[in-house]
Structure formats: structure tokens, C-alpha cells
Length: 318
Image (cartoon, rainbow, N blue to C red; front, side, top):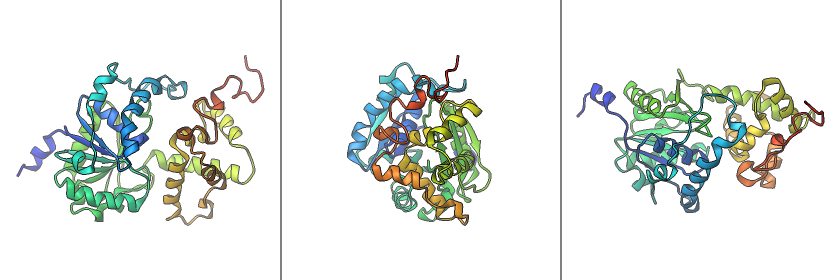
């Protein structure tokens, strides 16, 4: 058996990503951009089969969109898109994907029981791998009892789009070993992204804890009838100089994902202000999930807030 020092020094080479939705496929592309082979799988066959073409399109278009280019620290995808795609293997099953993997990253829907069931399976299929969840709201401490050795379990919370938000939050399960944390930190830094280690167990980690407060209050302002989503975003964008506002960001994330995350907070909330948002759930009832369906709080792929004159609200700005 390798010593702890040897285990720490051993780099992560083989990676599997379970979940080929927006976040999963972008994580796979980011890893492939580092020159590594990565295997991608999804329980929904149609999602898995279309993932390579979706990655190809995202590589071509995401970095060009002005709303993703608002700061200097960003990654440029490799010019050789086909070479990157060739390093992403599409696996028909989780067993095939995780065989021999050093690291398995889960990126399935934001539902605790779904994740616990999956991690119990991954625990059996990949007994030697580090197991990571990309969850943006569920701490790995809530998944720890689903695996035999929670010392190899942690959160690796990436952000979409990965090229213009090149960062990851690492948070342990409460039992995650220092060897596991060190190996994953070294791996993440090798991707060329910023790594932030969360101390202790923080609901929402760092960014989402702050973002959740903004999102909740933006939805409350609309739910209470004080403003329309457009005016919330317009004032936010002018005040903070950002390329989109809270409702534009929610559209990009996916309103179904936003609702799942909000539900996870509401399960443990004691503040009456944490009640479900009427405005958000009205969009869900319409099937308007944001960018992924072409309509959310805005129309896509050319949302209103990118149109000339929108930001001024009818006021001509020279």
C-alpha cells in the first residue's frame, strides 16, 4: 500500500464526469483542455448523445458573448476544438465511465436523494477513486453516510461558463482527508483555474452563499409587486457595472436549477422570507427555464438586456 506521502504526490490523471448536462459537459471540456483524457456519462441517453455537439457549439460561441467577457481573468479554449473533443470519451454507463478513474466528479440534478443514491453506486463501482460532487448547494457532509470512506469525498464546485468563470470551491465532508484535499487542489490548479478552499461546512459555500441572498431578495422584490425583473436588472447593471443582472443570471443558470437550489435552502430555513418565489414558479409552470428553453425572464439566445437602448430604459445615452 502506498504511503500517505506517496498518495499525496500521485497526480490525478484519469477523470470521469457523471452527468452530461450544462455543468457536467463544461467540466469535461475544461479537463480535456488540460490535455487529460476524461470520460463522460449520463443516465439519459439523449443528453449523453448530444453532449459532444453541445460542447463543440459552446467552445465556438460562449467566449464570444459580451456578457461573459466582463473581466480580464478568463480562459481561452484551445484552438484545436476537435482535439479537445477527441479526449472526451462518451461512456454508456457509470461503470464504464469510472473504471480506473483517479477522480469521479458528479454533476447530476440538485436533489439530495438522487445524489445519495448515485454516490452509493459510485462507492461500489470506483472503490479507489476520489469522489467529488459539483453540487452548488448540497454539502458533501450530507452525502458522507452514502459511502464507506467519507475521507475520499468532497465538494468541487465549478462555475458555468467555465471559460469566463475559471474557479472552483473545494469543501470537505467533515471527514475528508488532507491527502484528498491536497490532491484535488493540485489537480484543480493544473487546470489553470483559481482554487478557493472553504473552511468548515458552509451552506452555499462562498459565492453561492452571497449570491443566494441577492437572488432571494431580487425575487422577493418582484413577488411583492415592487418592481419588474427588467427594472431590477437594469438598476443592478448600472449600479455595479455588470453585463447582466440577477434575473439574467438566473436564466443562464436555468430556472429549474435555481428552483432546486432554493428548495434545498428552504428545507432548512427558519426565516419566513425563504418561502418559494411565485415569480420563479410561474416560469417553471410555463416551461420557461431560461437559456436552455429559449425563454425565461428574457428571450434567448439574444436576451433583451443585450439589445441597444435597453439598459437606458428608453433614455438615449450618448
